[in-house]
Length: 268
Image (cartoon, rainbow, N blue to C red; front, side, top):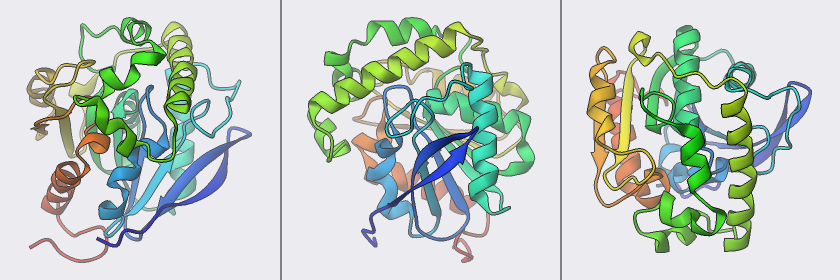
């Protein structure tokens, strides 16, 4: 493991700046965070994955260090903006697109609309796919002071997941993101018709997920041709933060199984 830290930069999206962490080399691997997280929520998995991939961790508009964008008020508009971002940072290469929770729903929607842009789709406890899911109810029942208890199976792991953020900053950012989620789910949230996906797809879930139950994983996978589902033990809704070692192994094993590695090497 190189242990390299991601570098930060800003790109313009729909007339507003978007904060981005990136590093590594190879085929682009773009991560979309969930409503209770930020781009930094993937930093735990960054060192291992950046060995073979050019890893990109954006703060979506209105989250983390990216200011709110008044032009983006629905999930459909958010997906359109992410497609623009993807084209901007990919250098014309196909992308491995990964999303957690809300970001997973956005990623799945992009894969449906623009499969030609993707090499693969990796969904980590994705929101917006299961028919009976109510995202507004999920957002409203998680209060800022209890966010770690909901996101993590073992809340004491939260500090290692966000090493540069104080508990107060985590709570403040959750309040901000919950407001954005409520706004988007009110103004046009549509369930993702995931059975139409045509790109290689992997689902990853934490066994003890308190927000979106891991029992959904095999059912969703069955509806996507050729999809695989992996359930990781001893973790909750954010396995990339809670168990980054097992998480990155699952990701690398899957991407290697698809053929040539992102860094130009070949799978064993």
